[in-house]
Length: 218
Image (cartoon, rainbow, N blue to C red; front, top):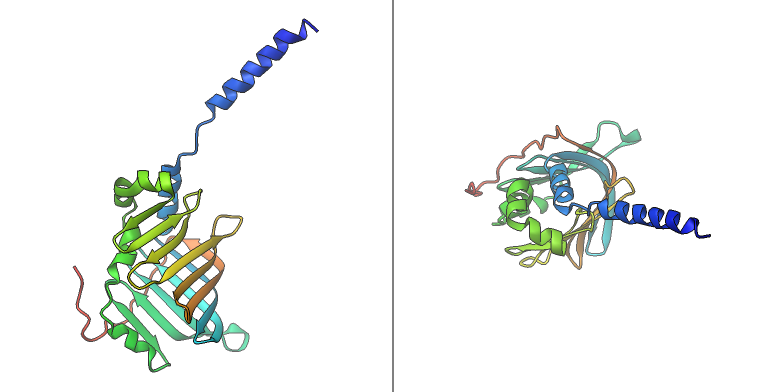
């Protein structure tokens, strides 16, 4: 028994030293990697649009570049061949909407400051320099009217707009990719994206024409 005591002490010391050598999670590195993924990606799947108690289920195709994004809601037709857009939404320094539904393009005429949404994620290094420590410590940050929340893995979890009341929330699958993205505009309007596939890099958001009366933002 006495011979075992020194051995146990040595083993205990080795275990303690190995635990001490394990580096804590570098949240800033995780955040940098996550923000980089959101710079350019494309995704497709099923969209669920809810408006005034009515729900529409269709296919969607989403493309986002550094400074623009486009969402197309499509009707696959027979066997999903040659889908044609039912609704197209383009977001850059202006908002453009094209649709067979006559009232939807009126959204394009609204004087909305759309730049803040994309600008928040457009420059990861600038965001890290200004808010990195705060995000790592609190898993959240407020920038103007926007409050952005992150998961413990530094994945984008929620964006809340205090001015409009709109909320975007994201859940992830076991691979760390977005699984569901919910845009809640108000109690009667929401858009939920059920993501089937997503790829990062080489996405191109094809612009829609700038609406008349929409001036370029600096």
